[in-house]
Length: 627
Image: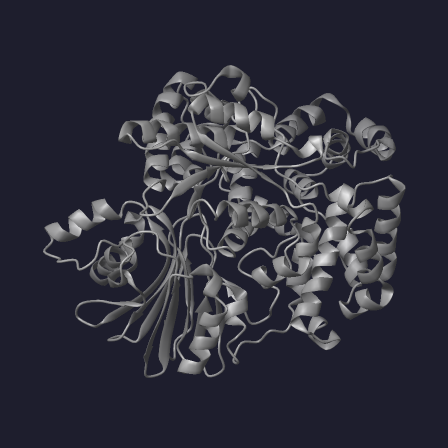
């Protein structure tokens, strides 16, 4: 795991400046390669082959190719054996050299053979061509920027790319609207007009004098038609999950597991413990964040799982003033990012790094296996429309939903009921967008002073899903948006802030593809995560498998009443909002309703605080935001 950056039009000083901003990602080494008109840098977190022989950027034996690579190739030993059978003589024990030689032999066609998480840049000195690529699901980030004169720069993080003087950092107004909708900026945009995200499962080719070509090399496809029995599906999936966890444990440094007590992390921890026993190794090291507020605390369930699998378990109390990390969080993202769970991952990663260098996590389980309550809502919506006449839904039920109260204590049942009853009157794409977006098109129109309502990023993506089945379409949409833009983004940024590598076995592409081929009726046959729960019953007691999902979220409503109350008053004012190009009246209304207890707007208010903090950090002028 590392940080990478480079440019086709640069000098050593600019490369060093970019590397300086990636030092937290790779404290174990730093390399720079520079040729006429092109250069690459690498900051190393040593995980596999800790020797200097595996340092980067790495040059092929014939001197033609240069690689800078961030991530892990889990099947590198198998690929190494294939290369050796073809006559290659490898100098290191690293996955980097395996990747370099595969790319030298097969070019971008080698991507389909890789199992892992990665973002890399390969320079072909003979063709003077740059190839950038990102892993299938977007676990590892990669951003790029066109430069004046036709050049191209790239980096693991926006902050590193912003160190290049040729990058246009003006604020993209359309991206700002998308941020308010999603609380993150969906790929391929960033908040900066001149910086783009390489989407998951995509590659980019650059040659001087030619247009930049960006194309997909892999995409998820939730359009399943297979109808095995549940037992048959379990027999298929358990070996895939077991192999994925085993692969993700490969390292030459200490490895642990984040354990919440939920089904996702519990399955991973159980399979890790199983593999450790097979190897005759020590107990699995598990880590759980604890909270004083009981509604958010999962120490009891996590301890039960740890005891059952024989883990060496550590509880890590959440810092009492996590909200004070606002500026630090913004600095690591390089653009506004409104999910406050990032603060928890930052704190958990910092503390876990004292014990391990790699941690396996359960992220992706909800998207892959169907774990969100909204998936059940999407399936119920059709039935609701059939059973309840439209005049009754729209003329009687919908107006009454405004009377439904909601909780500020982390329980969302009443809010979800209200959103279901109002959203179910919309077409499927708009319904799903209404459930998962935060500031609605009408709210963004008012906030941004637009002449018409802006588009819905989620509805547009939903409409392009390959299957008309609601569950297929919802999961496909989340795999392409919420997962990479939100969960994977904060997982990478916050863990790498402390040089901790997170690995996600539930996002092994073989698992994703296998689940996506199964008919949606079976994926939700017994409620949320039918397939994963069936696997879990082979590994864990029923009381663990059937425990209600809690979720890993901070007490934002409580923070806004306590720690953040004065921050809201200082930052969300008419003058400060005006410099962001935002209207005061709708924000004032949000704050008033939040404080009266009528509605829980805590995430919207937090997103605005993040936006204001990002603006301060960038030192932007009003003209840049209005551009």
